[in-house]
Each structure stands twice: as structure tokens, then as C-alpha cells.
Image (cartoon, rainbow, N blue to C red; front, side, top):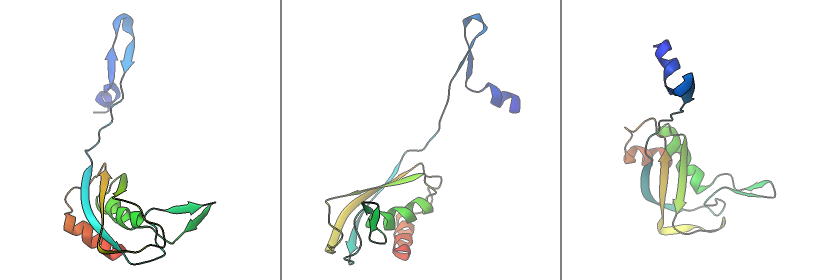
Amino acid sequence: EAALRGQLGRFPLAGGAWATAKFELGRASIYFRGRYVKLSRNMPQSPWIIDGERKGNSSVEEAICGPAAHLYAASECRFHAEGREDIDVRMLGSGRTFVIEVRNAKKTSPSSSDLEAAVNVAG
């Protein structure tokens, strides 16, 4: 196996030279759609850092993407909200629609209910 591993991605060319190729394997992103309600007037929608100073302890994005990335063992989680709001604005009623993109998930077995429970526990 070690000898074969050394040859993967190497291809002979004319004249005895070798071409090398690099392969990266990944997984298609997993998308979740939901709605959030924000009761705090001290939580921005996305992390706010102004003049090197963080505003608020956390953000809606971090409260949702942190547990999602952990639950799915993902390399990255991106948060896409429908609309924007300032740090001191609450989001009441039926909430604001959002989509998260979980990238390169190593686990795919957790359900959307598992994700909802993880976010509610964390946030």
C-alpha cells in the first residue's frame, strides 16, 4: 500500500518525466432552512467588531452555526439570513428566515431535529 500511495497522482510523460496531480475529495454542502426569534437587544445577527472591539457576547450566526458545525463535524458553516437587523433590535413574531450551509460534513446522520435541539441547548 505504501508503494502504491507514493505513485498516486503521478503520471509518466514522454522522455521519462513525470506529471503530478493533486486530488482533493469533498462532500456536497448540506443546507438547512429555518426561522429564528431573537429576544435579546444585545445580540447582533452576525459578529460585530468595530474598531477592534466586539459588540455583544455572541451573535445569531454563531449560536446557530457553532452547534451545526460541531454536530456534523463540518469544516465550515455559513449563515444566510433574509434581511438584516441591528444589534439592539429584537426579532419577534414568527421570526426571520435563514439558511445555513454546512460544508464538508464528516457526519450526515444527525437529523434536522437533532440540529434544532443542539442549537436550543447552546443558545
